Length: 289
Image (tube, rainbow, N blue to C red; front, side):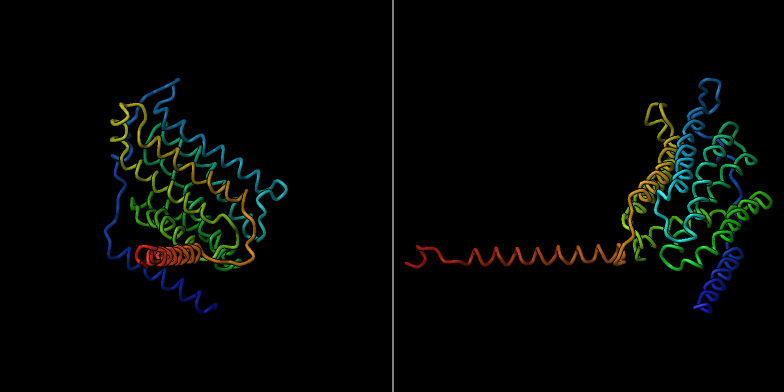
């Protein structure tokens, strides 16, 4: 098992190095800072993009408190408390960092928006490893993964290259839904992960259509503001999941659950069809005469 883990890390590092060599660098587009909604309210520039970050701070603080309040989340593994604490710290810090950035959007301030996000992304990956692969390896991976996230931000700032940060941000978007579906959970309410992933995907769409949504809503709200609100739903759903879940006695993946449900559905359809055919084939009195 140890040799397999080493091989996985070696393959991952080699793939990353090759990717860095064969792909061109991705500089930060300065047009990124030009958001659709520049309106000022109560003396706050870009007010809605700033204020819409408040939910991150609120849910982050609530999450941190509940992590330590009489084990409210029923965290049963050692590394879980550490992983979820870092996640909620990252979420709360997004509330400050993103607000600070949107007051005066530029590269220097964008660091404080993206750094907390990498803390949340990487801690979630560690949590999944703890829960669904190996508790010990997942616990030991928390700090290295957090460092990888921080290094990706530093690499972007020093070399103006977004490739490492893009990997840190988008790999979890693929890995988390796949692991949520394919790997057997140790807790109930695993489907909440998919709701969270769905809201994050919606947030990215809204971010990409910032100006379009602003025009569609007759300049009431921009896509970026809605992006903040949808992204804040990710920790909301995960908090609900933590509050409601219990340990599963028989671990089975969502994929297996769906497969069993589909088989039962198809079997029910076949049985219903047979019953219909049998019923229609019963002779009537007139036919007997």
